[in-house]
Length: 378
Image (cartoon, rainbow, N blue to C red; front, side):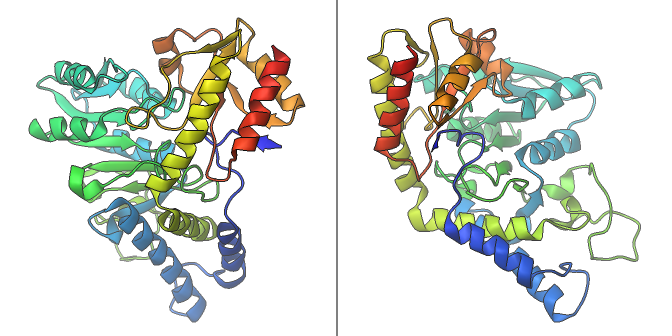
């Protein structure tokens, strides 16, 4: 199988990740922070090691700012529903995943409004002006994706963060598609809330994610319960990460996530980005030679794109194209990719697209096999 569905979940995982999960199942079987015996303490140490690695990788203020979540969607819900109140206004982009759009729609029924800012690929000045024009006196949050999970279009997130801080507005960044691939420096650019998926570019297991913030005490909680700390109190802790981590944690998943992030640190995100962008550009160039292939963006450039490519074959339903590719042993995703806003933006809401995304394990030979299969379908 040629696996190009890495925008959904990376596969395969590094050997170190698989080993870390297996080791955790054997040696970290006790509940962390709930007892004083050796296994519980060792398990808690492994959890803390993962926080340390995450804080170092993303230049967070400290490991205590790292809260583990089920996935990036959960982290985004913690921010949106924990921060916003009736009468508040939010600015977001026209390329958002449903992890942002659905919570905003749900919150709109509670008196929270939002404005969608237009994104102009390749013109960061125009995109920034669009965000600036969308602000008003009630704006309490800017929330946007770092890069589109459908088109790979990068937002000028560093400049949007600077704009937000100029007006005293916090910013939440959906890094599901970019963590581990694009450099993300929380300290330098002052991102207030980073929402991350563990199972994509960080090469961790599914069912892992993170919310990184030093402002967790400002968020109302969605879930309350046991944290292993200050158990005599009926009140949820105010300090991070306990405030966001009620109940027993996914220890094996967190151990695998730690190993995945250490793998990223060894390879370096800039090296991974260069490798994957070379593959995507080659894919784009070869597909552009095929009569009948529809490409929707300019040739991907790492200044403006992440390594994701969507296409169609004439008016063939995208799901049918993906099924045909599957018969040739090619794994891709088709449809709307949980991001109807991004498809409305590009006019593909009815057909969807076929999405191909390499990983650090992908090769040029695999991309050639993929292109050859598309040619056969045509």
